[in-house]
Length: 97
Image 1 (cartoon, rainbow, N blue to C red):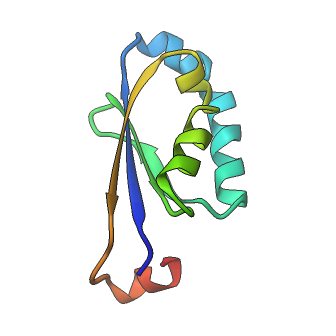
Image 2 (image 1 turned 30 degrees about the vertical axis):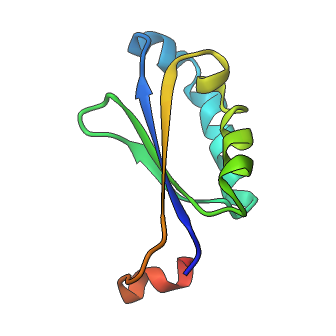
């Protein structure tokens, strides 16, 4: 199975600043889905940041993409990338991998 990346975004600015850029962030996410890189995304609970599941050629290309996120460009988040190689998955996820 290919490498999957778990991208964790942690807000480091007030939510008011984050909320102002949500429309631009959503457009950026839509492009990631259209390009076949993003598999899933959403807010953390409680709302302290977000998570993106991604699949791409390599970590460097993912880092390059993440630098174009309006949240990153405006220094609203800290980003952590965790790579893993799934050895098993549920049947429902096999089509994603």
